[in-house]
Length: 219
Image (tube, rainbow, N blue to C red; front, top):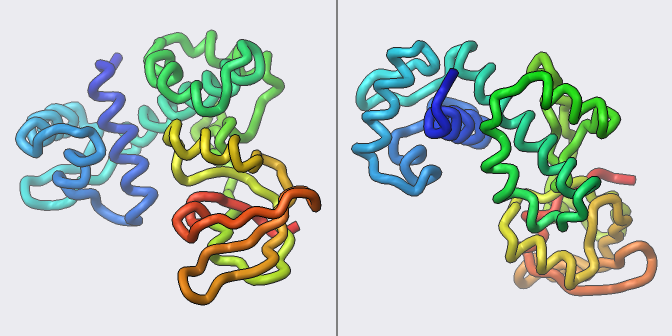
């Protein structure tokens, strides 16, 4: 049994490790957790004592296999709760994250397995992120940001990098949603902004920053 704070730290370390592909610094964890480096150091000592992380002062942090298992369990619960809120309780995709942040700490394996079964074992959450299975395995994602594609590429939107309410609401207003067909009509040389067509109907311009935060695969 781990505290909410311990679970949040392990989840943060896991996600940071995914981003950098190596050891995670104390400062990066502090920024991710919106806290001071001294507070992070205290928690890292506790997690190290419980053999959930590999940690030495002034060196990077990595998860042990035990710590990774806990992190993936929390991520699994979070993403299943997001799907449940969206599909069964009529939440919008920009509303589910904060609620799931609270629900992910409920300690009941049976509840999570029943939700998974009830939802017919979804592979991805409302934002396109893969849901770990009961064994912690994650389906490989082949998506990349649409900023990496070129003129005339026809894509299918699979997810987002930015999960903030503001960004998701922007996509709603622009008319871009998961599963949409996106064709790149033009790439502006000056600022790498894109002119795109959505589902062969609506044509819009999006900035390079927006493009970097939309994930897609070639159709």
